[in-house]
Length: 478
Figure 1 (cartoon, rainbow, N blue to C red):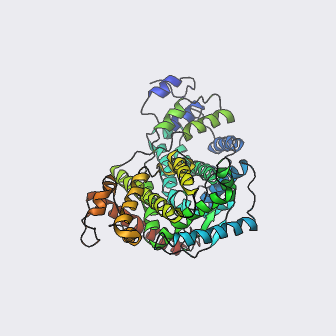
Figure 2 (figure 1 turned 90 degrees about the horizontal axis):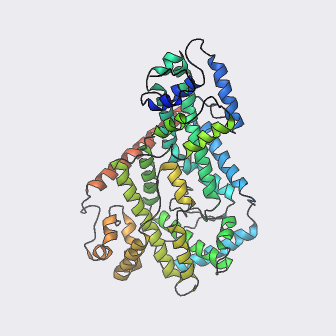
């Protein structure tokens, strides 16, 4: 093996599969062999470079405290929003217009579903307000990934003894810093993803998840994004607002009337995220192609950009695949139910609803910001792939059992249609209705039930621990 202290011997560094990537990096920088460098001086140099890249706080939180982790994510998200141009505060006129739309929407929806109106607040949010309102739920969903990232970065220091041999004390010195930096690097990506989503999302629950964690069923739209969405459509701005109010009101009625649904959706995402294992092979590749003799802010930024494209790609386990199938099915069922109920509510009163429904289908069919956000944060493609199948199933249920019979299927998670039922909607409609007491659960359902129960127990333990520590930190969980 060639001398690792030779910064120019990049070929051998890349060719040794046993070499720790951080060993290669610091050896290439000349930090090895006789005449060891001062570690504090070295870290000050790294901090200086990070500061020039706009990442000055990346090594700041060695204790990885929750509040110090999440404030930068919020700040990055708001900076992304600000970079997209004007984000005006909403006006009283916009709020009054939405309230009028919600009142009309509720009148129509009362004829299409037995689920009652939520009676909750009606709100119009700026993009920044959407970030603030949803941040507690984002924290719940992506904290497991941030933890996995920080542990993976710290563990990468322990793959071999080369670092300790080359620079005594380096691993012990860098491990807590890398653990902190791992979660914060992921936090930067999270803030960018959430901020990007805030610039296009139309309502509080458009992504299909109850991101506000709101038990009151708040009906909220983002007027700035609504105006952008409506621009170029043949329908009037009033019709677009009314149609979105109908969809948001229907979705919130479902979440409010079906107490288990929102928590199970969020728990499924959490369960998936807890199973993520960070693959650091891309880190090794990035460092292997990095020239430590050309250490500049531009070269560091280039390596950071290379990592952002592939560092956080998880490898799905069999448990994650089961969770993903259940999650995608539930999302399809929710959006299919909303499509069916809104179509029934508008068929006599709103001719433009058919065209707007097709516009929404096209919006969902493309890989939009919501899908990109969840892909970046938890490795999930949260796209309800079988939405038309789900809408057809709900329509068939209504024809066979009436609106109340259709909605009664939401009474318990064991009775809700499965992916197999979407393959044969008429068979589900005509078959014997399953009940929680008599309906058998297959192996996948049993495994999902176990995962959900385990995740709930872990969250309860975390809440008790937080209470014992007297942190006073709340995350908005319901």
